[in-house]
Length: 436
Image 1: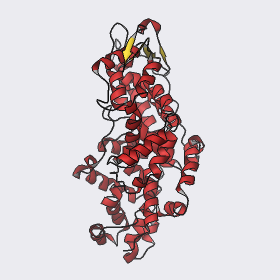
Image 2 (image 1 turned 120 degrees about the horizontal axis):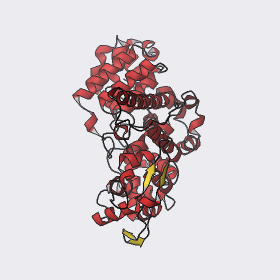
Image 3 (image 1 turned 180 degrees about the horizontal axis):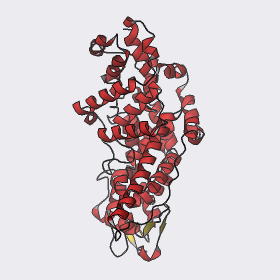
Image 4 (image 1 turned 30 degrees about the horizontal axis):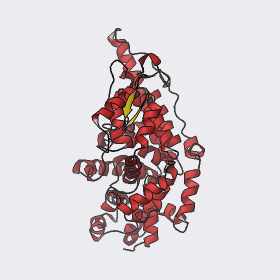
């Protein structure tokens, strides 16, 4: 079997980590480009101007009236169906958008930040809330992390998810304060105490949201008295709390490391790489500079990340160029990801989806093999079909952006040289494809 050049293989990894799968043709188009200039063009582009995004507009989401708790069972069932249907439409829309966009980096980054600020519709329920948060993630993912963090801290979906709407001066709820420090901004145990959590809850009290997803503070529910958070005393509110937390030295390291794990590698960065990333993030908390620094770091090329089910499925569909413009196909994709445990808008908890080898299991591989078999029947396999049998392992590698195969993978694929669909299924469930 032939092997692509190291530069081709490195470029394929860049495209897979900044998108959902890739193809040999896409790698060929980028392999000779300067990565810095290439990334500048992608990161500076308007995600709403992408032809695929234009072709997949967000569905209209109307506010849902309050739950009819004292009404008939039929009325309650209708309310639940309306809520569930809107979330299904929203999830199908985002999957369609991720599959349809021409340049997937903005959807990939939105997906990764959805996992950082993990919020689940299982509790939030309202598509209006979740859709508004999704748009905020897309808009703020490459800006100032301070603005991003504050918007998420006061977002209607987040307030519902982490009980921020129940946090009032007379009875502070600590959930949002705790998770903001522990997961979103500082990292577990990084310099804050239980007192800081309690005082932070007081600073965050009084927030509420209306049925349109607009959040605001009710002065009569906010604790306006003095608090002390991380050594800073004053009549702190949500904005001041955010500033105090992000002002801690541990915050920059935590944000840089979290994005590294999501974008570059399941393994932590070396001390040298971490320092370079923190420097790029800088005092302006520049997420675009941080993102670019991760992708250009020398350690990025040698990183390894287990491909999650959503990334895998979207990548396979994009590679096979399968249209997803029918409700039946969208529903099937949504159901498959539900079974695999990674449905958009439904992370398992506030920590987000796990990473690494947890996704490499007999059950997952079995389901993915079945899905690849079904998708291959509907997709474009002409790259494989047009090759001579002896060249088909190279051809399937080119189709899916894999530049080199291990002897073990070659041996596993050889029995399928006469069956392009089965060969494709084996290839997209190989170690080379499942680890990007």
